[in-house]
Amino acid sequence: MKCLAFDLGRVVFDFDYSRAINRMEGRIGVSLDDIIDALFYRDFGADFERGLIDASNFYSKFIETFKADISFDEFKSIWCEIFWPKKEVIEFIEKLSSVYRVYLISNINELHFSYLYGKWRDVFSLFDGLVLSFKVGQIKPHPKIYQELNRISNSPYEDIVYIDDREDLIKEAEKLGLRTIRFNGLDGLTVALEEYDIFCPSYKETEFLKELKKRIDKSKSILLVGMGNELRSDDMVGSSLIDSLNAKLTIETLNVGESLENHLGKIRDCKADLIIFFDAASYDGEERFRFFSTEEIGDHFYLTHDASLQLAAKYLQRNSSFDILIFGIKGYSFFLGNQMSRKTQEAKCIIEDFFITNFSKDSRKNE
Figure 1 (cartoon, rainbow, N blue to C red):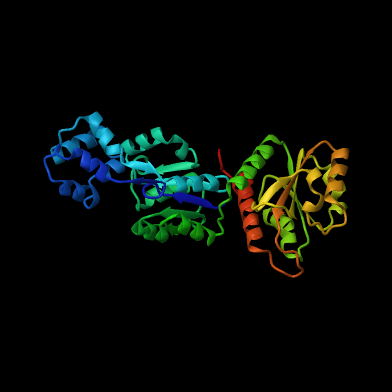
Figure 2 (cartoon, rainbow, N blue to C red; figure 1 turned 45 degrees about the vertical axis):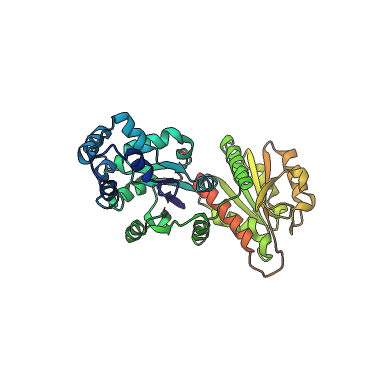
């Protein structure tokens, strides 16, 4: 199970302490340079981020250290109103969260977190879990905060991809065995994730996967059926997908290869109330996969087996009481002996990871 862990500052939210410093100008008894030096070079707020002191204690420390004439309520406003969301990254995480487990791991104090959570709760709801320094009692790069990530994600470090903008934190995480990406923009992040075989679905693909999860969650028993010719490049994708998922899921799987007709009796007699067929498909549109109804099949599918999937679906529905869903994975090449094309491979990775994340035997997604 692939797991993604995002830093907060400069990755999910941007911030600028100069907004706070400028609002305090003329109301503090030291130079602004002294405040900047304390915040950025002497780690003035480290104990606050570790949760060793609470907000009122930190306020008192701030007032005393910098001889500030600011009330506690005004201080909270000045201290917290320095953030804004990085919308493109948040939208990217929203799409990733339909396939992968995503976590937030941040050095953050209780005031900043309460402010951000209160204003952008929908952003935090995208994550399967939050690892926050003030709750853990340590800040990155202390091993304890990564141990907490390991605990709540139930993932070994080698299965976690940790994304942070700070090179020093990246290097320390690598020493523990985490896979890492130095964040320097969304384009670079996309490319780096693909090197780990992590692909982001499009909005339409995300909607397909959300609908698929709803259908599966509502069903008591499911059978996944893979179809295809393993010698004809993209036509193998349905069979290859099911082979990759075999024995990993709480859902039953069946690879029928080219001979769907030879397995109709077994499929008919299974106790599933939802059967999902996976096969290579040809259709208009940019989506790498989509649903089809049995009526839509016709020329949409390249089938190399003798029995028509359309006729088989009608036969099964006539002889048993279960729903049938056709899941088409777009094929681009169907020549003998060729490898699977890149986009079809990407689609297979996304669907495979979707099932392993949500329906593997040890999945903790959305518990």
